[in-house]
Length: 409
Image (cartoon, rainbow, N blue to C red):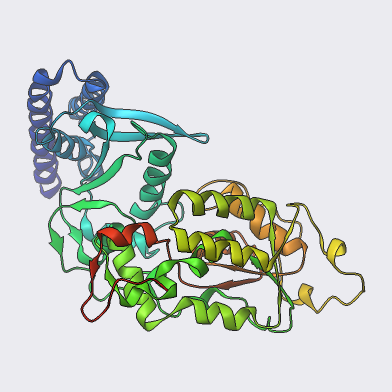
């Protein structure tokens, strides 16, 4: 009797979803000229047909209803109704060998919107790794959107990113997304205020850095470290400006209490600094596009201290004696190969393996790469610090803090 009652309830819920899906299709009639709308309609019809099929065969399960994509499509259509000058929905872009689908593109291509209708508690838990292997977090998706937007500029501009959370989002999770320069829309929920995301921990250096490397006299300097070292924010501006950009404001706050440059200077002391050609060229490219005048000068001075070698340089190329400095006792990369994908970017892999070959400690703020490598059993010899972006060009739009005149160190 109980099973019959539950079966009837599931069937009624499925029928309601079918009706809801058909109403959703009807609401799309006014968007027929919009690029991608037919694809969206096909996906909705597929969901409706599946529900009709399991109703007819009386094989409805609770999981079928819980996993229905109609919830997402409904949220997408709701956002679509509020967007002005929409040009595309479900627009595909190729990112390396992956297809990235942008939910809504508007403002003539200058704004990309992602719609998320998942349970907000689940989103936060997934970001902390409390899920099955292979389940992608909202940060994984954010990184894809960011990288994709950079590869497909519109009118010489990188599209602005908006993430809309239809069912709300944890406050801390929203702040972390905003630190990536993503605009977050949706109700902020105090469901994750006791949670600490890994990349937020002030113990980042101790957590990821290789132990017992003080005796190694060589340092492989990553692009992220060069940028942090010459940034205006690490050279005094953290005490002078309040930035409008969330990620810069946060880094300035961190810099006041946890300055990066003294940490790096201490680590560099009595060591020889190296970098590969890829790192040097990438650093200069970023520096002369994003950097300010004084950041560029500091960058040029820093490069004078660094020995630049070919990407494929080896330990034998730079050491004339047989002293190994026990480097092999702390590195475990061996013959394993890291496939490109996710947080393992080709440039980063080139830089980190260069450091491995010349038996140098790689100094970097790329904690995502280090973690991803560790998950695959490869532990590069690293010293990890917090990231700092170039800020000098942003200072003209930043608010000058009280009791500080407008000078730059």
